Image 1 (tube, helix red, strand yellow):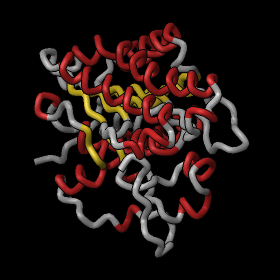
Image 2: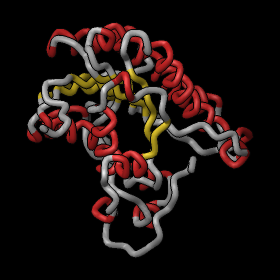
Image 3: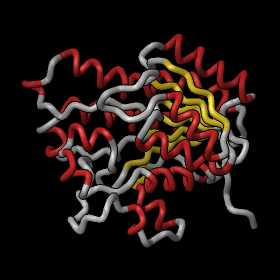
Length: 276
């Protein structure tokens, strides 16, 4: 029996110029998938590695077909146009990955309203806009999947007291996705969320969550990418309405040695993620 594959499948992803999103795209590309990326970074950024164009080049080098689209998911007409562009290029959409996200861990009294708006607009509203635009095409896929990078919902005060606004924005992504699971059930469209057990070595961790010390206690984005691949290759009818954790997905797939995913060669204890 051949291994589950995304060969010939088309993914529409928000973000993906770097980090977890790019890792997911590259894993799919190794199968021969098509990946349409809608991301804001069209030109090099002094603090952020990669652009939508360098990501597309990496996807094609890995064996996939790429469609880079420079755009902002807060712009609903631009998202609709991007989705249509992907459909015209690849013939449809099989997977929607809600990857783009903004983070600010300030408490309510210290958070500017414009920063609040940014997180809600990108995280929660962006998930709505991108998913809505993809849904008609996912329904025609035959095995349509929505995968959102957001945490399981836990109303413990520690997730609320320190950074209620960010928590609201990420939980909003999860609620929308679980709602889509029910809404899409009759049409055979799966919707799940995925979140890492530990910190993941990304620009957000480097620049916002602790620098080199935090990176030394992180895993590489590839652990989330491999978990995403395992989810997206399952039959949609049998895999929906879940809030997955990366290592649990891999354990189910028989992967129990997670040492290759460790970032760097530090012996420091891994740091459990913010929402776990």
